[in-house]
Image (tube, rainbow, N blue to C red; front, side, top):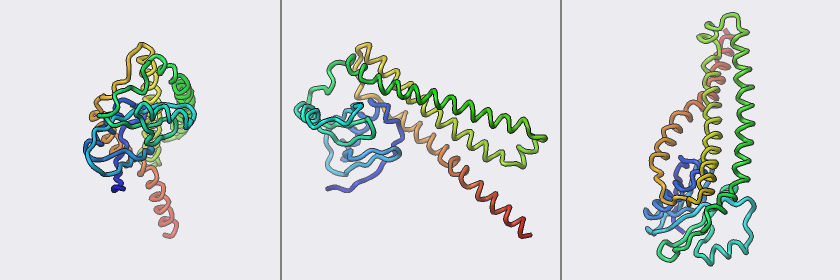
Amino acid sequence: MGKLVKRLMLDDIYAIGRNENWFSDMAKRGLHLKKIGRFFVHFERGESKKTKYIIDIIKEKPSQEQLDVYHDCGWDIVTNMQSFYIFSADEKLCTSELHTDPIEQGFSLSYLNKRLKINLIMMSIAMLLFFGIMFSMFILIDEPFLFMTKGPFVQQLLVIIAELYVFYSVMRNYVVIRNLKKSLLQGKAIDHKENYRKARLTGGILAGLFLPLALLTIFIPFVEITKSKDYTLQ
């Protein structure tokens, strides 16, 4: 067994075509997919190999009979993250597509599209309530501008930015799956060679911006508590 290495998951798992292409390119560099998580992807270092990957969205855990059918078509399961099951095949040996009917595949995304739509609606309601509370707190303060300079305004601003990023992620995932479903129902197959570089670069920039902000939202309260204790002791 080769050495396992980690790479940041800078793109959404919902971006199926981009991730399939990325995994294939990594295999050409001798890094073969082993495990995928929310933040990191684990690869096993080995020899360079031309490997095709397919991400299949399956509502329930596939049975052994279903996996045997996939195997007979040249595809073997590698790993999964929730409903996203990833299969690989040797590019030289496997020429068949796992799904030959895009329309049927589009209908299979209906449950995921519905679930993400519900998540987006619930998140939108939560965001409205959150901003309503924040706005009312700001209005009820006698000296709002003084609060902005001396109160916990910076911390609350960081929380707002973090919440907006989470909302943006939920909305983006829904839009990606909705558009994918629409494209499949029109008979257009998934592009397994979709360019992933721009999306990963954007994801890296966003992670570099929002991770420090998230850490600050945790760090600032401890600083404020320390200051309060020092003031009390004096």
